[in-house]
Amino acid sequence: MRKSDPQNLAYLLISAVCAVIVSIVLTKSSPNSAVSALCIFVTVLCVQVALLRRELSELKAQISRSKAP
Image 1 (cartoon, rainbow, N blue to C red):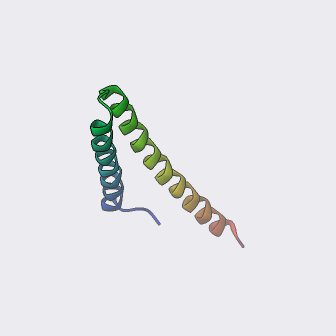
Image 2: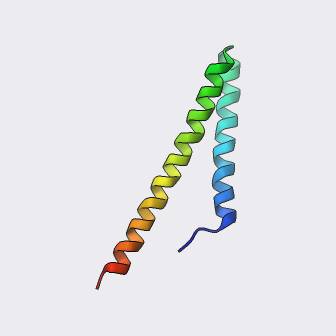
């Protein structure tokens, strides 16, 4: 079952919101903007990797089901 485009946009929105929250916290706690930018990038990357892992596990399950006799 393919994911719909609105669902992909929702996941992207979730990762963007997480990044904004992390940036607000880091900007208030650290005056170094380079550290804040790096943490935002890592946050978005971690969310995207987690979503990719979930999609890959779903795909693996679909392939296993289709190969089963």
